Image (tube, rainbow, N blue to C red):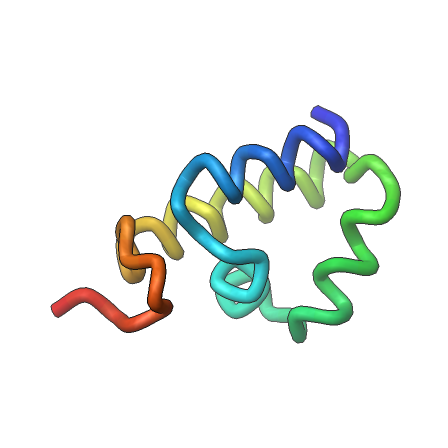
Length: 68
């Protein structure tokens, strides 16, 4: 999967990059820098886990508030 596809997946999931970055373990800036190049399989796997976790926590909440 290419970096642009990862960005599209994050957006289509109703998340912001900072949501995913939080669960990936990087600041938003460093996470965005990570996505300048196509991620390796190992990094992609960790990103996908972070997306799933962020979806559970933030859901479709566009405001960034945590769902109870």
